[in-house]
Length: 606
Image (cartoon, rainbow, N blue to C red; front, side, top):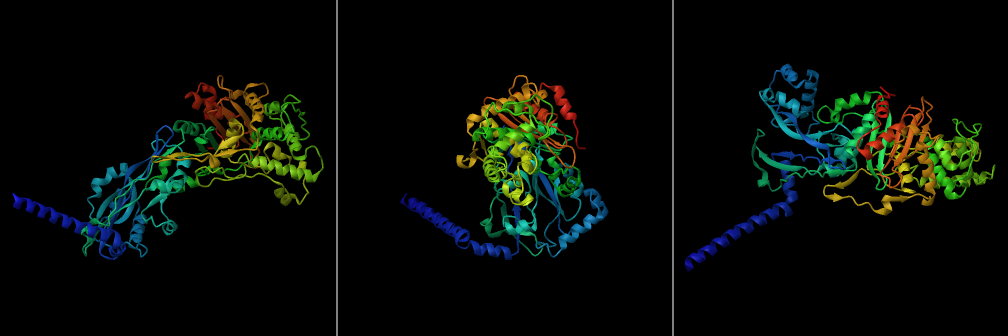
């Protein structure tokens, strides 16, 4: 028994010894001599297999998939074995001989550092499954042809192209800037795909193989100790409501413009519609380059992100802000009244004189000529020093509304708009060579004043929240980690005391409910909507239609801005579209079918 016991311990010791030797060797290779072996791997006859990770999926606020992955195929050719009937091969792949010859030239080019006649080279990239399935049997009849699987982006609902973005093959600049990428990589080129590229892309896996003189793999290099496995990219949970986004794009068919809908209590963007739009599946797969050129050449600037980039005069929607500023600085009260003097500035016919809420309801231009003049001059006519001082004060108030600078949405390329100031007017007219008559158009949102549709929607949020807003954003969690928004960076206060907003709300509610209201036809029977119409002057053609709103008045759930180019006054097109969107979001269906059909059939762009 003692002999058996001693043998058992000897075996344990022997196994322990070999295990320690193995661990020591592993530690040496992976830690101490890692750089040496990695360098050796680059110079030995080693074939490297890159395992591309699947990008993270993108979901809407309810967990519906907006972007996912599907299998695609790279057709590879090994030049040493590649002998085909060129015309038949081209017909099978649906390419012409010029393309074939160009690809062969590129493969053999000196710029292709990884070229070897023994190693498969990429010939056609990202062929979609439906096409590959129809030719794979015939494709494998050709000598020297092989296939590698990849993943490409797929959009189950063809919506949100501008906000979701697309991926594209990396450029030489990308390769220089980030050593993560290799020539066969794809990366986010726009939208969320670009903004969250590092989170979505994951981590590539690498497998190395020793090869013989013919390029044939004979063994795993260093027993695989330098190999790594790929790690899938993180999923994104967004704030978008897929159904509302889809419906907004449906309403904006045949139009140029944008819709931005935000949850005012959080800053979460519910819909970000750019019109015209396109099917995002067109910019996925091997046809991305050719499809991009087609889209780029189409009329209407289809690829342009109007919602965050288009800078236009806001029109009369800023009368809500001007009213709040006047109330806060004490130059007006709820009962301050002015007559509609069309000799000062053009206006439409309505009752006169008007109180402040009635001026919002009827959108009286002369009223705001007087109201903002009082903010600037405090009644001291002709006093240039006071005009400049008053303009400085007004500018501070306006900038506290987020105008004049990007709001910080998680998309690249957001524009700032313009808030006019005394320095700008000094440059235009000369130092102190301007007066109120020169600049009064900014009182009604015209002239040098410009904003983006996103900033318009943010104004609606500020009205809904009675003086503050939350930075608009599109993503709430990355993988399992929720994004934490610090109040100091996320919640932003205007300079307006919240007590003044009830007066403004009274006027905004009357816009849709009282005689003279500029959006009466857009009223929703059992939902209290507060809104304001606007007409953005366009020197190049018909004016643009603008509308902002929030609903319901108590505990608002949605704030919205609609901007439609060349559609005229805000009450005719933008207001109906906005309230139909509100109805769709709050009620999940639309009862005003005749108004809905009218908006769908309105066409300002073909």
